[in-house]
Image (cartoon, rainbow, N blue to C red; front, side, top):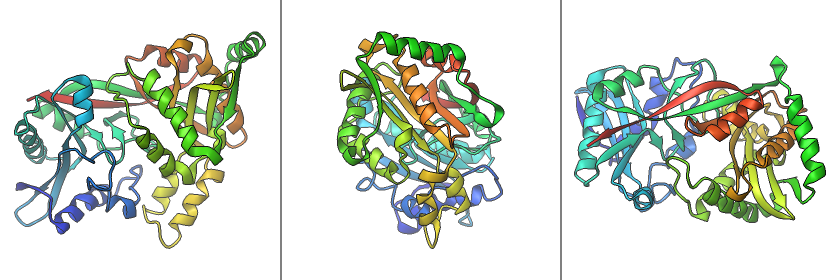
Length: 371
């Protein structure tokens, strides 16, 4: 076995398509859209890799069989913001073999040491934009931008010496099981509306996506500043994300709360295309693209990707107003809503979701190791 850096066209192709073979018998793994994935691992085409040093590592047997892969990289903006020397890894996949995992991770560690990094943390996948390895909740499809992996990844990481850095949680409501917004929440919203008429809620204006993306960018960089691992992002990153979600964007799933007409908070949800992507096996042609376009009007499973309110408005219940409007606008077609990537230490959000009677269904773990 050897670990090489994938720089040649054939090796990059092997890197991209290795998960297709690894998960070929798994009923819950969702493939990427292969047409996009083939071009994603390039600094000139991926906003998260632009200007950053990175390497695609492949573990190969002597007869050329691919046994594993890992993307190791340095996020310059992260290190500058936190004044740290932290390297990242993501896109990790491998067979259940400690020798393979240790070889990949050791090569990743050495690559980072050679660049004066002091910590390796991951998985934080800059292509799929997913964080952590799935730890609990293996019996359902992941939502878009959430990982899925074999359970044995955790023992492979821990045996190498990686330890827990942070856990992320997912909460869910299932209307087919009779979920309803608690009565006390209904009463609060009615009372709040009569006492605070300067606050109003509205859905996203799809005719002005650039302006709306700027509202999300402004609110995010202020309200999420103290979140573990968050780095203020450039407006172009938010615009890029909104544009990529444009084809599945449901205006009923994105809401703003305004103070006298000025957006001060938002809830960003979207219909989950993963059931469709799995059905078309990640292939856009010949009919995959048409089926994906139907997600916006037909999908009944949604992801609540983010909910944020400016700090000066914390504690007022504006997050409840946003959730209530999102819920009510989707009620005719919604079956499942998953709120994902809740930091285990974010007690305010966890408490709010649990008061809404949302059920904790999944956990993800991010690891790190000192170099």
